[in-house]
Image (cartoon, rainbow over all chains, first blue to last red; front, side, top):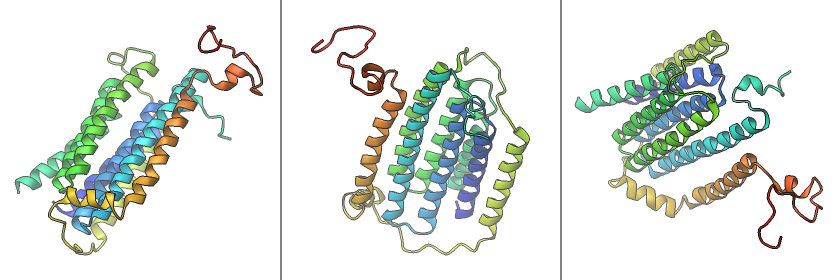
Length: 100
Length: 187
């Protein structure tokens, strides 16, 4: 268990999440990609805390990250529900009104 | 040594099940693959001695993925366990971006001369976290709570089927609300 190992695993999870967020068409799957990316941030932050500065402050930051992830999920589901209700859309390609 | 192997094993599980989210055919399986990835990361966080954060991550994510599975079934409009599907766009760009990101991050991780640990962990990590939250770091939690309330309100407003504008008109001046069924207090 080293800092490098922890960060490498986190980087791999982050990259997989990035792939999902870019490539997926279904809104909920895009959210899963974002979740994976935040998952990686949690792991990396935990690694930084343990291997570099194990003071309680760092753990508070981790709690903030977890709270942010929850809020992202809640708002994402609300937007997905709205999209589905307004135009029966469950794909990002069906909601491209703001693209040029 | 055993801890090292377990840590790497969990990391492998987290990455592979994370990748499986975008590989498996069914939405339900994808959701549970993501849950598995979160549980593995939560266990890794436990290995890094953060008991509270690790357990919170695992508990929260298992619940969240259970809810997500319901959403999947609701929105996909097909039998989520049986229909094979490939719903991707610009796959090649996405793969290239992901690989490039990993290479850049890995290069940074391996090349940076990381500093040595400053200070030592408190003997009771969870107790010290609780004391920090109830003491000097209370403002953080005090800020998060109104944000969460705002999220609840915004979530309900966005997802609500009928709002006050549907009931009382665009200028809200209509005296009797337009409801599908009459009744209720005062009506």
